[in-house]
Length: 437
Image (cartoon, rainbow, N blue to C red; front, top):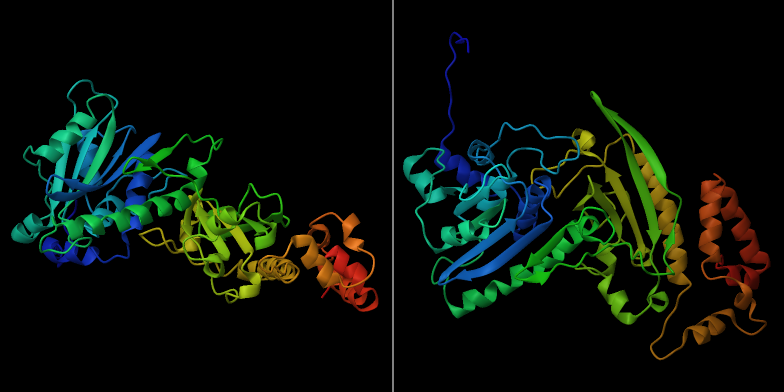
């Protein structure tokens, strides 16, 4: 490299910078998910997450059966801002995830890996310890001494390739004093439960049967179940027409897809248990909104990305926005892969599409009153009032189907005008069709 006259190399303080990078924005479940991203990129079919104690030492271990890494690749993986190139569709982006995710929760991370190309004992183990980095003020990855944890990792990899990532010195998860007490042990139960729920949502497309990806994930030995926010198994769920938007940014271009769903009202769900399950970790009101997927992985959900506010009447509305890694710059995805920015060029288009979705969801919400102890037919009859039961011959969801057809034909404004006239002149028919305003 040619020297530059008058220039000086400014190497950042390893001790100061590593401490700063701990606050990049991860919570515990998101940090675990970022490690699972690496497992998926390595072609793993199984990932086992263990959150607990090894003897008196608390630890977290994420073990997979992926391709593993050669020694040089492992060293590069532990570099902040690794130089490896990411292929199209890979879940990684910045070359920071393994380090920043782990060290956001602990002060020591150990990685053991065995590549497919080796046989027998070809396991490489390296560790990064913030206390050692602070003492030496150098970017260091060292081969740790053998102990119960590293021995366990080697045994785990004895049967075949894969990688084991171990977090130790969990100062962000457990208190510094007496992390081995009974209270500390109980405190780890909370992160384990939240992590299982988070992984089930974030990777639900990878976990769902028939998805073709063949991924299984466990947390403390329990299989993680996928949580699909759009209730695909519910017969009363409705979907509006699919939308596609073309985006160009710099030299990159790609297609964004937007799918819109109206979930069933409480009375229309197959069971009260399923209604409760699909309320999600945030509850029905806060789970409404746009679910953003990058390369099939859920990266952001809850709320409408400042396109509109959260409303009780639109809590049944959920939408899936999908983009590929080619559009990372357009969506300005953050390092923790938890936040995106909707590109300005599609915001007006999304605003209209979201307005249509929320109008349909609001109609379904208002048409489905439900009082404890009252049957669905009795509730509908009370709403219609005296007279012939016109709704008995009308298929469920007829109103939503008509709305969707009007949108697909580009005649939604005309449909709204027709609906207003029908509601005024023949309210009983409009009500039976689910079009009463």
